[in-house]
Amino acid sequence: MADREATGVRHSRSALDPAASVDVAVGGIRASAGILDVSVSGLRVVRPPQLAATIGQFAELSFPLDSERPLVLRAVVVRSGDAEVAFRFEPMGPLQEDALRALIERRGQLRDNYGGE
Image (tube, rainbow, N blue to C red; front, side, top):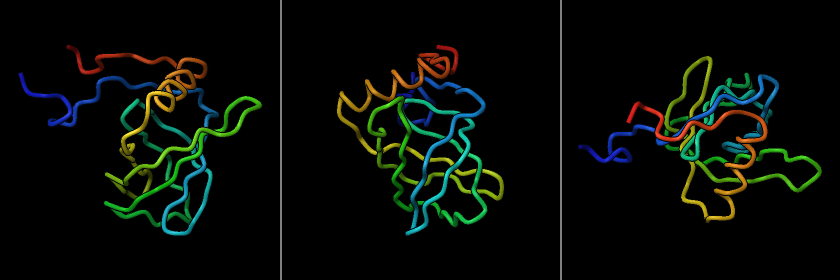
């Protein structure tokens, strides 16, 4: 069986509340973007018109949390189209991953082993 990380298959993913958004900073531009789906390995958002993200660019993603400081994660642009942008999270510590999982569990439904295995 191929290693999932090597093949790009997600271990988990979730659709959040349709109103969920994230603040995205790429190339000196900061914008709010609607979340299409999220996993513990990455995120796909609706492309804000002013965001000119290119594959390989680093980004900072800031998830608002209920009455707390935002969860800020570093990521890399892995897909960029006219309508959406996808990011792969940079390695994060266990506390950041726990916070991301908690955010997904509060505002969406996390499905581990996404991909049928």
